[in-house]
Image 1: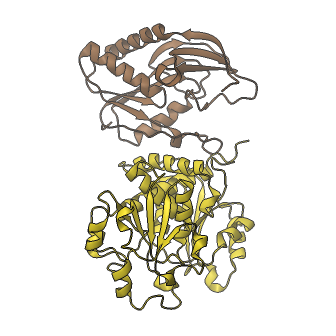
Image 2: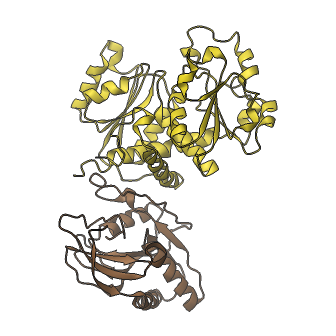
Image 3: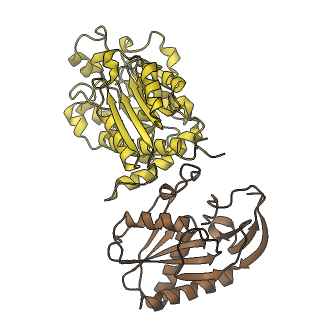
Length: 310
Length: 195
């Protein structure tokens, strides 16, 4: 058994609140390692970690790759363009092929929700979901929770607004339940066209206006407008969306003085955040990226360590 | 921890104080003072002992030596079998390059913790020398490692556990021999950091 209550991380709900705090505490130690001149630990020497990224990604893939290297694991990268999936190989066949090569951990990003689960049914390796369709992105949620916890010292009681494309967002899919598990309150802010048909299933307060309650949030979490996932136009123009749902200088001024702005990246500059907002000191974008490596190291350590304990 | 029963108390608080004072003098004697020394304690008991040694060095030599703490969880040789339930942060707020590092731990046992600690310190730089100070040496080494400074040698059996209790963490200060129930894990014990 591994140290966590689940041997895979497909959904944030696979973890208990205790598991989440264990990941965040362990990540704090790895963050210290990442600030040393020699950023390398022998911990996972000889383990094989596969990055199976069948959808474009820079920061998540790079972050996992750096995390594996800093723990001395051997990392192998697959991308959609170089893998046999372009030759029409099915996911099940890919999984069985990788399994035959004795991988210890596979991180998968795929455009279809549930693909990580397919891997767990066809491989012996531990599986981490690196983002599946519009479903979940649990490691992003963990690094966001880490960032909030380090900034405020706690997560319980925080008032968090998540703004933007709620309907298509796998970031929301993991972050909102994660925040609820740890006792924060979540408000989803979006135009009705970017909310699911039944917003009541979100388990969050829903608000159509960003300005209405802007002054009461501790965290304003801006989701990226994912033009690649929008089948029809949910709003007339990006400019109009930005005017109603983007953070600009005027809205910066309306925030609580201690409030922070977060964004999973990559930012559409001038859409979710104006240049002034991006450059604002309260913006923790780069801290989130930095924390991402430590959080992923912690997950790898906790999933791969101690597994043969009787 | 309910399966551990105290068999005997090897060192009480006074005896620990005296042993630490003697070890301090030995460190100062063999290094000709405290110049260029730095103390690094292995969490969660060695770091407290390192601070206690630093206080004594200050009292004797009037010199403040830098103190760091080291968590060796990520350097263990048994990560695949067992991982520490709680990872502490390493904090070495000084450069180890060219320094004489006194590595401090509570109980020296198999030597595996020390092996891991040596690797960990080397990742911070290149010390001039590393010396090892332990409060208790209980024997049963599995690696060619020995301590330079020993508070007390305590011959023990492999079915026993030797553990340091410290007032702020455990409510009492003593070194005790505990009987381990058959089948209980005794090396890499999560509490007491026995090594």
